[in-house]
Image (cartoon, rainbow, N blue to C red):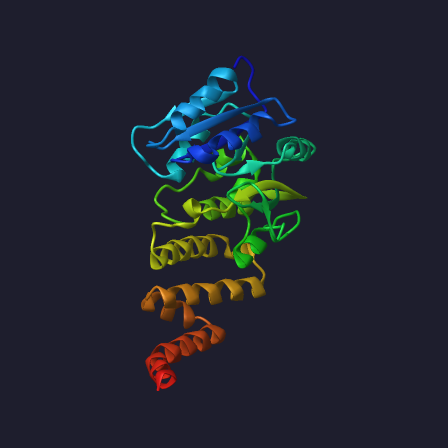
Length: 300
């Protein structure tokens, strides 16, 4: 590609040959044509690479990077980001879809701002056949502005929906490959701490729900441990950006995560810092102590 495209779409893939073609077509069929699509295949064992390369042969905007060993979605996305030529970066999972005008609408808002901003949108849910599943909206709206407090207390926002200038990623860093879960939420929070977000109140990203993406190889405790680590880090580094009520909400959530993952020392240390925290610790301890007796009583 002789000239730099406006947008690079990063698409990690692993064994999604059933949906990959539709995902690719939703990108190359965008009303905004000045783009490139980088498909990073994480050592698929199905026909994914063959399918991806067939599209690359017919459209110079499509590039395929096939890695020799599966490294995970964060590593795949980071490979794509480092290879990107676009001014802005967007993400699409290989079993999902873009609306036809997603990038055009987000780009228009991004370019209208005098300073770098992150543009995000609403999502809709699809079934395995591509039919919309109610409810139609999956994005709890936070609106526009410096909304780090909304993201960290309400635990929402999806990296798939954003269009982000490359320079923003240069400042906050890429995906943390050490995280086994919530790595996208971590990057979103880093962006929200540093940049203003602009919201497009339209469903521009289609999230497909099917058996393959609902089967997580991580057990529940591992997921909660990773989630706690992300929340802990951003609370420590971004606490000054939060209101008092938001700090209280984060503390409450951290205490819950510490309790459920057996991190008693952290739970006590954080809980003893405030009267509300001590109440939560005491309540969680009572539940843990009385739980076996309650279960026995219910059986009796």
